Amino acid sequence: MRTLPKRAAVALSLALACLASCCVWLALPPQAAEAMQVVRCTGRPNSDDDPTAVQGATQSRITLETTVDEGEGVDQLVVHVPDGTSFGTDDLNVTLLTGDDLMTRNEVSYDLSTDGQDIIFDFDAPLSQAGHLNIIIYDVYFPQEGGDMQVGATYTLADGSEHEIEGIPQITVVGITGPEALSQWLEQQEWVQAWNSNTFLHLFLDPTVLVTSFPVVLNGFFMSVGVVALAFPLGIPLALVLALMRLSKFFLWRGIATTYVNLMRGTPLFLQIYVAFFGLPLAGIQIPNFPLGVIVLMLNSGAYMCEIFRAGIQSINKGQTEAARSLGMNGFQTMLFVIFPQMFRNVIPNLTNEFITLYKDSSLLAAVGVMELVMYARTIVASTGSITPYIVAALFYLVITLPLSRITRVLEDRLRGHRGSKRHAHAPEAAGAEKEVAAR
Image 1 (cartoon, helix red, strand yellow):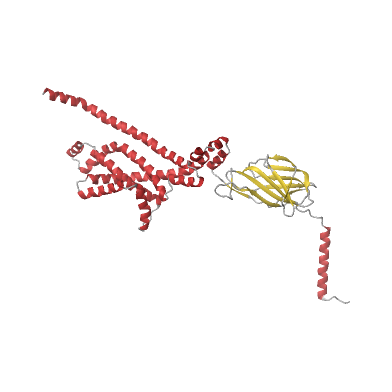
Image 2 (cartoon, one colour; image 1 turned 90 degrees about the vertical axis):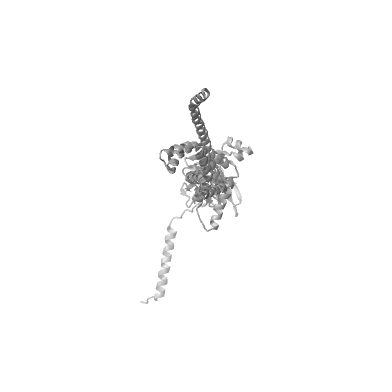
């Protein structure tokens, strides 16, 4: 018996294997083609700062586009809107784009119903023409916290089989804060629209800008209070030393203190800030903005408080000093236990006024980039074009200055009353002395 060559045997085996595979493939039932595949799924950008961002709690829309195969009847389409997302159904847009360039728009007739987050489209006639089905859902508000939003979709064919559209891309939504959400809500209110229709009100007191700028400017408020809360107490010991030097009988100490006070009081604080923030770096001295701002305000306020303390010390009757010395106190003890307590009581109203002035002067630090109250407000003004953030900043200044001004008036009244009671107490003695002199 003749045997086939080895190569012929291998070729015959491969041919038989291919024939068997074809027979198996022909025996399998036909596979249904995927009638609908996703083309795109997007959310409309709605951010003023980023033209590509989709924000939560802000009006947007969802655009879902899928393919439709020729001759494959699609009876129903169910679109699942992401959980937590609100949407409207009064103005849906459903269009079948056909033609080689997909520029032919065909209106699609359907019955609409909803079930929770599902929008159900029951088509009057099965979709059998090849093209792209474009669905636009308006008045969409994604959750405020944002995140990756997943749109789902399922469809039912004419034979009753149900399929899911896979591979729908997620919509990335940027979360927004509570004030931003409130601002978005206010924009939709009729009374706000009427209010902003007035140019003056829109420019100086826009409610939508007011609610968004408040928390931002609040950060600057804390910064301003922090600067003054450090600069003012640090300026008190400096002022006391300068006041004692100005009252010293030693010419050198008196000259140094007088020169310093005249220099700081005779030049604008704005100029002093510029010298410190731009001059020191040129000299190779690098100090962070916050502590440098504290130092500049402390040095400036110390000069003004020096004059307050000096006047307060000089207002104390010299008899107080003589009485303390007669009790055996030295100069330091007399100043510490007798003069200073009375002096501080007398100058508290003036110190309060100085604190108010220093708090307002902290706004000058905005010129050198310190993120205080005015700087934060100016940043928002630059992005919104509204003066409202400056009005918000003014309110934060008034929160501090008005109560302190009231306290100052109360202290001044009490101080005048205390001095008046002393005069009335000494009046009978003085009258008796006058009568005695007249009798003599």
